[in-house]
Length: 229
Image (cartoon, rainbow, N blue to C red; front, side, top):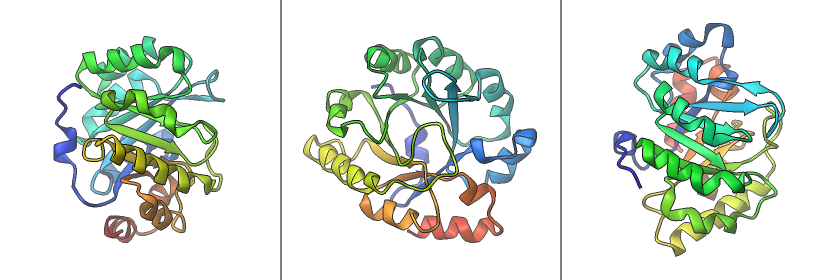
């Protein structure tokens, strides 16, 4: 696994916020990154190709354009059919973590190898209907597991509470394989004031808040509440 110092710089023993830029004002993205700088622990960039998931989202030149706006880590989530063609471009653009999908099995092993070769952290995201135990062969190759709490590529929908048991299952898997100290569990989708405590109790280390942060009327209060969980 590549050396990557972002994890040593992130706070320990508290819930981390991986702020989803999909929920930012896309017409003022640089300003939004600067506005959220004091409150986000990481910035989450969903990449969609209209094939693996519906719609189109974020591309390397855009990531490069906003990279100078913050020193916080960029987490690029590749929801695409052909991730191998994009890994290096996003790393050059400023990605610190690149996450691939477990369901994109034919590209997964080679994709993780390519991420490692660039020297950044690697992750695996798992959709709601996939078996979390299929993660086990890749535990030596990743530093983050992202559990989807909603259907992929759709925002503004409620958390599917099946994810709570799935988080608990991944937590057990990591403990059984002595990987709990080096792999973070992240929850993505359905992040609301009423769901965050449940996700934290289930074992989540990181949440991916969108409107919870970007639409907050009191960012200081919202962030203090998240960090206090």
